[in-house]
Image (cartoon, rainbow, N blue to C red; front, side, top):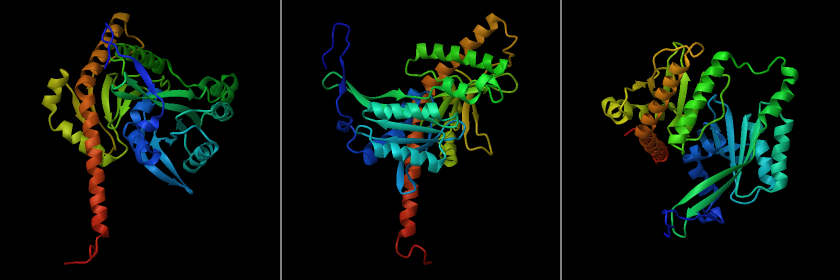
Length: 352
């Protein structure tokens, strides 16, 4: 690989993504489902894959996912230029699954289809949003490693939707409270500091009506910041792959060695199975605090603590969580396949 005097290479675009993914259904869709966090981070969302090749009417949706609130998100893929049939399929899937978010991924968006998504975002209310995303591949030099690139070419205009749905700020306008505003201001500053230290961690949009925010999603779930009822700020790895059995299996692998992970992170972690719920978490907590009465000095100290706590957890756990979550998912899929084959075997339902 040819480098300049600063050991920097030259980034080039690979002209055709099909040089990497040979087919949509057999190659690109499985890859995207496994690496949904790459797309989610670009959109500032947290996504959990529910299924692939999901039957909707007479068509098969490429990827069905859900957001933090459990709402349906559909992802339709194309390794070609956008066309009428895929636009129609997006609308069929949205109607059939009552989706809240439609994400159309294509190698190249023609202007008329980009304008169509913009028009849908302008004409629909806050219950549905449409994203157009172009996928590409970049490479360092002539023979260096390649990486996927997603570029959002159409997105909702949330301000315009809010004005249209709630003219004059009447009933149904934003319910952002002073406390939630203070929380989100703090979270935004923490994430800016995190992003400066770890540029790969993308800063999500504000979650103004909640006491938490999730980001940097992956096959294990997502990272999160929250302030809980007793006033403590929580930094967490929220383990939710969309499947309770896989979540528990992943959690058990880490909870079995708490001392090792405490040592790797350099901080005290709590391993919370959260009985009765699908998800689990690995977390650390600050002392209780009131953000509305916090002095500037104490607020800066809290921000510094949360930033360092996240960086410590992220550096120690993010890679292992992603790798282990993929291994757990593959093992679960293989187990299901073996069980299905056993059930279909001749005489499988007959006693010995």
